[in-house]
Structures are given as C-alpha cells and as structure tokens.
Length: 398
Image (tube, rainbow, N blue to C red; front, side):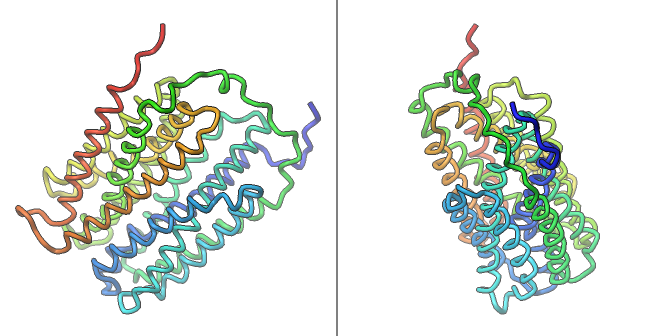
C-alpha cells in the first residue's frame, strides 16, 4: 500500500467537513423556516396559508434536488460547492420574502430545497468514499450528527434573537451559512483523493440479504409514512407552541430541543444499536415517533410539546439511517432503484403533510384544527407501519 501523503485530509477533518455541510444544508437550508415561521407570523410579514405554501415549495424542491443530484456523480465536490453557496444566498435573500410578495418566498424556499438535497447526496457520497480510502468507514455515522446540530444551532440563534425581527434573523442565518460554506470550500480545496480507490468490502458483498421483491412495496410505504409523520412536528412545532405562549424565549425552545435530540440520537444509535437488525431499529424509532405525535393530542401544554420535540427529534434521523441501511441490505448489489423509490415516497409523504394542513385550513372538525388532525393522521400511520416493520422482521438464523 502506498504511503499516505502528509497533505491529505485526515479522517476526522473529512467527518467535520461533512458535518458542517449537513448542518448548513439541513439545519438552515431545509429547516430554518420552522422556528422562523411563528416569528414571521408575529411580525405580520407572513400569514399561515402562505407559510404552508412556502413549506410545501421547500419539500418539492428537495424532491427535485434528490432526483437531479446525479448530475454531480463524477464530481460530488462540485455539488457540495454549488449547493452550499445556493443555500447561503437563498437564506440571505429571504429578507425579501414576505406575504406581500409570496412568490419570492416560494421561489427561494423551493430553491433552498433543491440546494440542500444536492448537498446531502453529494456530501454523503464524497465523505463516505474518502473515509473508505482511509479505511475509516466506522466514522461515517458521526457525519450525520450535523443534521441535528444544525437544527439545534439554528433554533438557539432564533431563540436568543427572538426579540429581533424575523427578517433580521434571516440575514444573520445567511451570514452563518456563508461562514460555514467558506470553511467547507477551504477543506474541499485541499488535495484529498490521491489514494487508490478502496477495495470492495468483501464482507458486505458476501452478506446475503432477503430477496428484494419480498416486502419491497411495504418498505416504500413505511418510508413514505415516516416522511408524512415527522414533517408535521418538524414544520409546525414552534407554531403550536406559540399558540400556547406568546413569548418567543419560551415557545422558541422547542426547536433547539428537537435538534439536540436528533444529534444525540444518531450518536447513540451508532454506538449502541449497531448490532440490532435495521428493520427493528427503524420500527422502534417509528413507534417512538408515533408517541411523539400523539402527545400534543392528549393535552395542550408546553410540557407535552417539549416531550414531543424530544421524541420526534430523537428518532427522525435514526429512522432515516436505518431505513436506508435496510434498503442496501435488501439489494446489496444495486440498491439504487430501491433507494430512489424510498426517497421519492419520503418526499411525497412530507409534501402531503403541509398540503393536508392547507386543505383543512381554518376549519375545525370535532373541536380539532388542521394541525390536530394532521398529527392524528401521522400518529396512526407511524404506529401502523412500526407494527408491520417489527413483526415482519425475520428471526435471526441460529
């Protein structure tokens, strides 16, 4: 094996680069709108209907980005660069996104969805490949803690700055995204791919998973239900908290708690649940998430919403990791078709959530508003699919 040149990026530098990329792309590009929406409603720069449409535009953009990320297949670094610069620009430009010009906000949030998907796909490809070259694939899971850390950081910034105008907070997040982008671009400029490609993971190739046809549609449906179930609290949790208390220093806490739980749960699952069957990990995460969407229906209190933030935030990234790992187990030689269908189903599910809230609108049925009914639907879907995933798991061979 050739000696490793001293100028190569170290494995942990690669992990940190990927972590920062995902923190910007997901914490800001995808989810910054969640804690800022109630502040924009407070400031009168946004109404609930327009906010729901902007959320839907972001999810549609994410689907488009996931389906077009293959254009960077030969150079994922370029996808990271373009995506992060795009996230920083669209975030800063949100100062012009108001209810008086709703199309501007829709275009910006939709574009941010495209850019964030490019970063997620390309960062995963580049970082995991570079770690494999350095025989450090075990560090790959830590990169995904960036999603939760980015959400937590965005939540803390909007929480501490809750007395400011939402438009000023958009500018500050744009500056933060630009600073993180500069760090990642600097890391990507360093020579890092001069080692020989890694040898095939023979243990992974020898492992035989179940036949891809069995349970194929079920996996896609379960992942779609997961997309629908998590997106309701992920979009509206701070808004639900604002309905109970008007002080942003109080209702704004729900989002950083959500992000912190996401980051810690990935670290926990990577360390302690690696021996569990992926289907069982996914089922357990989906069941806990169902409890998280159920709690706000049982009692309208800030404590219940806080518990919901912990339960949903602490499972959505674990479910994501386990679901995609299971897809690779099902089709080890070529998981791309199943991954593509699951990703499309997930995107469709998270688009359907805000559309359901938009369709119900301000109408109240049986004393419940749109968010209550959407949470109820999410709870049923998550619980049912968690039950199916757990009981369809084949017992281990002895």
